Image (tube, rainbow, N blue to C red; front, side, top):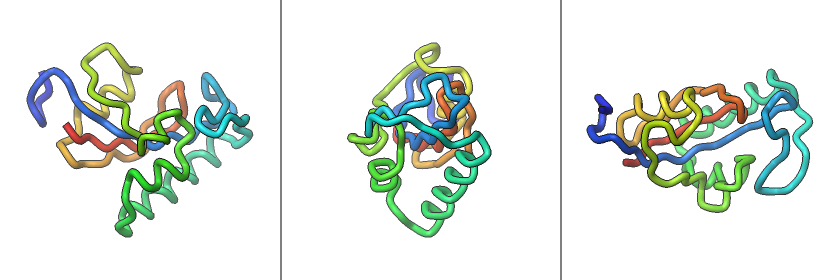
Length: 118
């Protein structure tokens, strides 16, 4: 059971920055190849963090920059339970309190910032 928000399911949005080592190095939203290195993707996600701290809306940035098909929905991945996402992503999402945003989370898909909403 999730210790922070209760329940066995969470709702989350994310901003994904892929790199050439990602399992699918293509921008799934804009339908183009990703050519940046891991280090460049990490620098990009850290720049996104600064924009969030400055008060920009998570959903707005997700639509602008996320390289996942969920970008069209402001990064919304919906509600999911244990075992439905990559472990690193899932562990980070379940550890967040509702309304919190993670630091950079590295998975096989790339580097994420995750916002839990449920």
